[in-house]
Amino acid sequence: QVQLVESGGGLVQAGGSLRLSCAASGNILSINSMGWYRQAPGKQRELVAVMPSGGDTNYADSVKGRFAISRDNAKNAVYLQMNSLKPEDTAVYYCNAYIISSWGKGMDYWGKGTLVTVSS
Image (cartoon, rainbow, N blue to C red; front, side, top):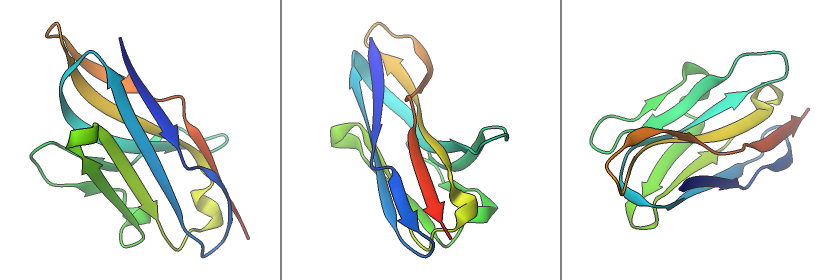
């Protein structure tokens, strides 16, 4: 069984910063892409940033220059540094990873989400 557990959400004032963390655990053989999505109230879930294991990092236009994604492959972890936060960044942030399990099956996994609230 594979799990993704996020942490680091909270309440911050506009212009502030937060750092989200996500760690994968369980029967993991390898991890391909890891990334972050978010879902604001009344809206669809959207990509924030994704970092493939060997490709270019991709960011949503709305966060370019403000957010930075990074990975620690030794820890099976992914991070999202969020700077210059805006009220419109308020959402539940979900960690996502495409993981090859120990028995050779690959699939998408999701964390349960962590709430980020940016006050104006």
